[in-house]
Length: 143
Image (cartoon, rainbow, N blue to C red; front, side, top):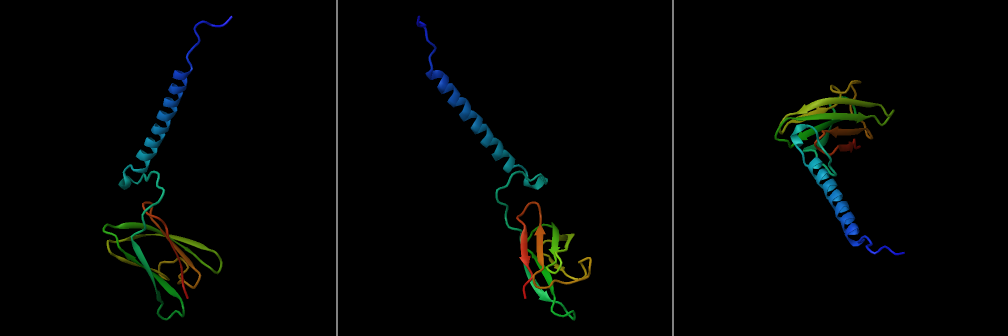
Protein backbone atom coordinates (compact mmCIF):
# COMPACT_ATOMS: atom_id res chain seq x y z
CA UNK A 1 0.00 0.00 0.00
CA UNK A 2 1.25 3.45 -0.91
CA UNK A 3 1.79 6.17 1.70
CA UNK A 4 -1.06 8.68 1.35
CA UNK A 5 1.13 11.58 2.69
CA UNK A 6 4.59 11.32 1.08
CA UNK A 7 7.25 13.74 2.45
CA UNK A 8 7.98 16.61 0.09
CA UNK A 9 11.48 16.32 -1.43
CA UNK A 10 11.98 19.79 -2.87
CA UNK A 11 12.19 21.70 0.45
CA UNK A 12 14.82 19.28 1.73
CA UNK A 13 16.99 19.83 -1.34
CA UNK A 14 16.58 23.61 -1.06
CA UNK A 15 17.46 23.49 2.64
CA UNK A 16 20.61 21.49 1.89
CA UNK A 17 21.67 23.97 -0.81
CA UNK A 18 21.15 26.92 1.56
CA UNK A 19 23.19 25.24 4.33
CA UNK A 20 26.08 24.46 1.96
CA UNK A 21 26.03 28.04 0.62
CA UNK A 22 26.12 29.47 4.17
CA UNK A 23 29.04 27.22 5.15
CA UNK A 24 30.99 28.32 2.06
CA UNK A 25 30.27 32.00 2.76
CA UNK A 26 31.37 31.60 6.38
CA UNK A 27 34.63 29.99 5.20
CA UNK A 28 35.31 32.82 2.74
CA UNK A 29 34.55 35.40 5.42
CA UNK A 30 36.99 33.70 7.81
CA UNK A 31 39.73 33.72 5.14
CA UNK A 32 39.09 37.39 4.47
CA UNK A 33 39.32 38.29 8.16
CA UNK A 34 42.52 36.28 8.64
CA UNK A 35 44.20 37.78 5.60
CA UNK A 36 43.37 41.36 6.56
CA UNK A 37 43.91 41.37 10.30
CA UNK A 38 46.40 43.80 11.87
CA UNK A 39 49.49 43.86 9.70
CA UNK A 40 51.39 45.80 12.36
CA UNK A 41 50.65 43.23 15.04
CA UNK A 42 53.28 40.78 13.87
CA UNK A 43 50.71 38.02 13.43
CA UNK A 44 50.73 38.31 9.69
CA UNK A 45 47.77 36.23 8.67
CA UNK A 46 47.26 34.66 5.30
CA UNK A 47 48.85 36.54 2.43
CA UNK A 48 48.80 35.27 -1.11
CA UNK A 49 51.27 37.91 -2.20
CA UNK A 50 53.27 40.22 0.02
CA UNK A 51 54.46 43.66 -1.06
CA UNK A 52 58.02 44.08 -2.26
CA UNK A 53 60.65 44.77 0.39
CA UNK A 54 61.25 48.56 0.34
CA UNK A 55 64.94 48.33 -0.54
CA UNK A 56 67.31 48.56 -3.48
CA UNK A 57 70.49 46.49 -3.62
CA UNK A 58 73.69 47.54 -5.34
CA UNK A 59 77.20 46.09 -5.33
CA UNK A 60 80.54 47.81 -4.92
CA UNK A 61 84.01 46.42 -5.32
CA UNK A 62 85.98 46.07 -2.10
CA UNK A 63 88.98 48.24 -1.49
CA UNK A 64 92.24 46.32 -1.49
CA UNK A 65 90.75 42.82 -1.27
CA UNK A 66 90.85 41.82 -4.93
CA UNK A 67 87.80 41.24 -7.08
CA UNK A 68 85.28 40.74 -4.31
CA UNK A 69 82.07 42.66 -3.69
CA UNK A 70 80.17 44.28 -0.83
CA UNK A 71 76.36 44.31 -0.94
CA UNK A 72 74.91 47.78 -0.34
CA UNK A 73 71.28 47.87 0.80
CA UNK A 74 69.53 51.20 0.20
CA UNK A 75 66.40 51.71 2.29
CA UNK A 76 63.21 53.12 0.83
CA UNK A 77 61.48 52.67 4.20
CA UNK A 78 59.95 55.42 6.34
CA UNK A 79 60.38 53.54 9.64
CA UNK A 80 63.17 51.31 11.00
CA UNK A 81 63.03 47.93 9.27
CA UNK A 82 64.24 44.74 10.94
CA UNK A 83 65.95 42.46 8.43
CA UNK A 84 67.24 38.92 8.40
CA UNK A 85 70.08 38.65 5.91
CA UNK A 86 71.12 35.22 4.69
CA UNK A 87 74.26 34.71 2.63
CA UNK A 88 74.82 31.43 0.78
CA UNK A 89 78.38 30.86 -0.39
CA UNK A 90 78.66 29.53 -3.94
CA UNK A 91 81.97 27.75 -3.27
CA UNK A 92 80.84 25.40 -0.52
CA UNK A 93 77.11 26.08 0.01
CA UNK A 94 77.70 27.39 3.54
CA UNK A 95 74.84 29.57 4.83
CA UNK A 96 75.35 32.49 7.21
CA UNK A 97 72.49 34.42 8.82
CA UNK A 98 72.55 37.78 10.53
CA UNK A 99 70.05 40.30 11.80
CA UNK A 100 70.24 43.98 11.01
CA UNK A 101 68.11 47.09 11.35
CA UNK A 102 67.79 49.37 8.36
CA UNK A 103 67.11 52.90 9.55
CA UNK A 104 64.59 55.02 7.62
CA UNK A 105 66.04 55.80 4.17
CA UNK A 106 69.25 54.28 5.53
CA UNK A 107 72.18 52.50 4.00
CA UNK A 108 73.52 49.13 5.10
CA UNK A 109 76.65 47.42 3.77
CA UNK A 110 77.04 43.66 4.04
CA UNK A 111 80.60 42.49 3.51
CA UNK A 112 83.73 41.40 5.33
CA UNK A 113 83.06 43.13 8.65
CA UNK A 114 79.52 41.78 8.98
CA UNK A 115 80.11 38.21 7.78
CA UNK A 116 81.30 35.75 10.46
CA UNK A 117 84.17 34.44 8.31
CA UNK A 118 85.31 37.98 7.35
CA UNK A 119 84.87 37.33 3.65
CA UNK A 120 83.28 39.43 0.95
CA UNK A 121 80.96 38.32 -1.83
CA UNK A 122 82.32 36.52 -4.86
CA UNK A 123 80.41 35.89 -8.11
CA UNK A 124 77.67 33.33 -7.54
CA UNK A 125 77.16 34.03 -3.82
CA UNK A 126 73.47 34.55 -3.01
CA UNK A 127 72.01 37.12 -0.65
CA UNK A 128 68.44 36.76 0.67
CA UNK A 129 66.89 39.58 2.67
CA UNK A 130 63.72 38.95 4.68
CA UNK A 131 61.13 40.74 6.77
CA UNK A 132 57.88 38.98 7.74
CA UNK A 133 55.72 41.76 6.29
CA UNK A 134 57.33 41.70 2.84
CA UNK A 135 58.28 39.31 0.07
CA UNK A 136 61.82 37.92 0.31
CA UNK A 137 64.44 39.72 -1.77
CA UNK A 138 66.98 37.40 -3.46
CA UNK A 139 69.95 38.30 -5.61
CA UNK A 140 73.14 36.63 -6.80
CA UNK A 141 76.46 38.46 -6.72
CA UNK A 142 77.42 39.39 -10.29
CA UNK A 143 80.82 39.39 -12.06
